[in-house]
Image (cartoon, rainbow, N blue to C red; front, top):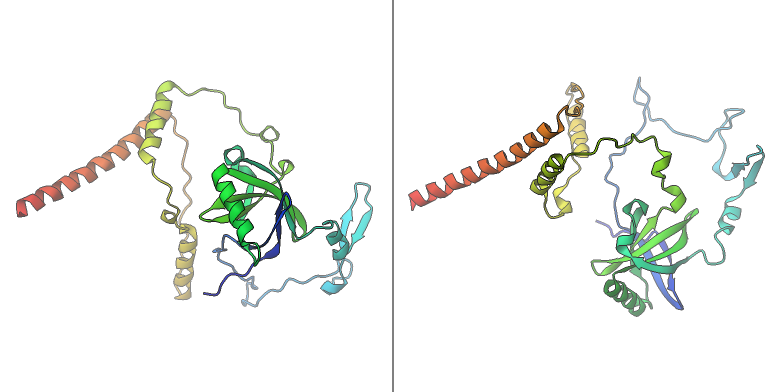
Length: 279
């Protein structure tokens, strides 16, 4: 497997300290990518730029960006003009504040990147990493990535610095703007008690390797079956229904969990008894 390449090179700055760094994507795309083809013969379909007036193909080099104002006027901009809006320090991640990690609502986090240090910045990188670990703080800053300014959070993780791009406050939808049904009827103490008991029976430690992408695996199995010429029968969709009696549903869920534990315990006891008998 080839080593991942950096997607951005620049400088991480806080105060008067500047650290030359590289950014690497901390995630990888595991989605299945399909080609578009023509239905009747499977011919590959291409998407091309065409003029809306003539339908003729337009070369990428002869295009510009356009923005339509509220008055309907169209403003034309080149890539160079748009790039100039990045300011005089487009290759610098400027840390402006340090905040407690628990104060950041996860809804603000977007994509994670691993921050790698470049030659000459090792000592300052280690110092910043140690300071963030000890203070249990997250660095908040901003920089320009590709075509837009990014709000970022810098935090320590596993002996390295991780940078998360973040959403600006005006990108997070206010709940009051949504047509979310109001919560009218308060739950009873008994319902809360049973729900808490069910949560407790399902409680465990977070182990990400436990969770696999079952949907992608199922799609790949379907692809392999079709490649062998099998006919695929589509199963009917099943939609779970909200229970009429919430307390009864919670009680049944608890009985199912406890029953499974008792069966496992009984099976284990039987194995132990058989082992003692053999001895």
